[in-house]
Image (cartoon, rainbow, N blue to C red; front, side, top):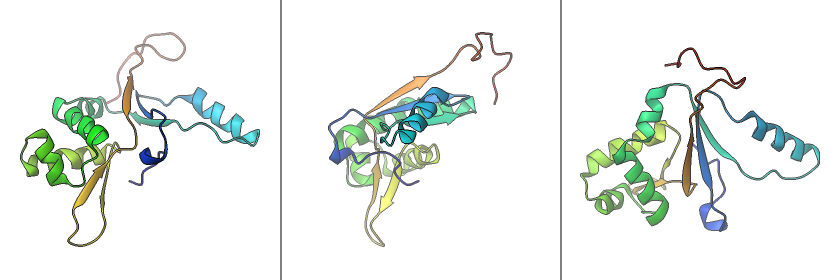
Length: 145
């Protein structure tokens, strides 16, 4: 996945990835559209919406959270360096990084054949938003799987 956020090296602003279950933040979309209509550039808003509760579990697994923290704070140059930083086997780390890439939370970028693959994040923080009621204030009858 191409990095949809701002370049982390070009801004000092804290970038938050909002993870939501079920539906996206429609108010933020409306705000962005209104800003565009006014000829303004809307503030970046990073969001992933999951409709499968298992994906939320995959994001919040301790090993995956540890990797995301290391990627955001240390900015390792390769999967091997990432494995060294978390003191884990390279194959296990590679498998977890591929899972995070499937969830669109990181990108695995290679600069060419024979070059190491670099895991990257484009945010500094994750905010998980899990609504317990429907948008109209009523309780959800079921959780989509």
